Length: 631
Image (cartoon, rainbow, N blue to C red):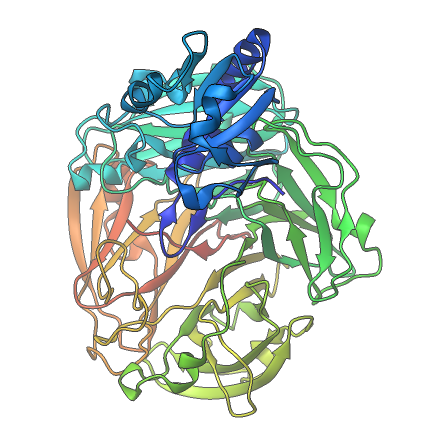
């Protein structure tokens, strides 16, 4: 497992990790390692405890020893070394001292008198990104300097990919945002490198693989696109929606949320194939160091018998894994866990069935989370507590299936119930699922819980904790949602986690807010418009842990590609209800045309937090659906 710290829910992201893992920094680290090794052995002065990730993410450096000034840190493991007292450094046999810190001029001056004159001192300032890539030049380890993300990107004569986002940083005061792009092929080789200015205001922004391929005269490729946004404010993650669509007159169509920018120890929520499906997991190395053979493995969830991938994966390379090759007898609704060793950001998987494919993502499985006894005795003011809402698409046309997925390494059981609501917020039914074990293979088809005529126009359901028969909870409740067109057989799937919604009382950071402290009682959701003859839509759900405003005061704001607000339309959603939004039912066709394909709708509400799923449809049986993102 890589010795890196990436993200936790208490502290957020580790900026040092992003600074060291950035592809441009990786190149500089390789040059620094070559320089150090050519000179001889190197001693590392590690004032901030980053020697471990530094050595994990850089080529091999001939290390003489690691030194610290904190007396309590002496004797600690730092990478494969034991930390020594800084006072021992003058007796080192090293010829170079590397100070493992950025903006380290003062540190270098501080220890100068301690060192023999023959020792050369260098710092990590040598691997800083070039200044044009820096938003805050005064503080290198400011999170805004590393607003980055990876994108599964493909254009192979059968499929194309299309990223859609907006310059949402303009809403936080950013003046001149630009995007730096690196496109890697499946071998991890850079195919193209370019910069693009973002719209001056909060305009929409698109990167289509067909355009990239034409611009750089590329052949077919499957790989990953690295994006670095410069000049940002307010958010340090590049959020996007990613469509995968057929270019060979096929019917395939799918969309996924942005990649989680932080590598994880494990990922969960990978479905085993049905008898008529092929499931491919796309392994994409997120770092400039090779993933050794055997470092990654797959396991049936809860089996604890992982099967290793006996193949090396080069830096930034992409490799497809047909899960049936590792588990030939395993079928849906069994689930698979990926033990990723912190080598990958949130991977995609691809399901092929009857000539149609769909892309979805698996999720971070928490290693830092324990069961929380307090969830069993929540204050009555928090009502039903944690909710995981999901749409029930109009049942005259679609099937909706839900499968709970364990998302914490220590999660051994899940005591669950499904509450079902119509679009007007009336609770129609509930279904107690019992205390599901970690290795369960339960997937609930809503057709088995509702009469045929119910929710013909759609509604929604919520997974909630139910302790009537015992069980534990951690608040990180997740599930996979699968939607199938009854006529065409096309399917889409999405996964997400539970939160508390729309209660003024709070519990350990819930209800969450997109910006600011809890309670999160406002909405700012991004809905892209359609493309290439396909129309977008979304399902907005008004979940409520406890009683809240009877009706939402929602606005649909239509923006063009320059970030100009073209028109605003009101929308009302009943508490515990839902609504399906088709932009053309709210805005005139001429306004949609003016907005253009890079235009978008911002869904705003200052009175409640809505939860949403978005997608596109071609009107002929192909559609996509995944959860929306906000900013």
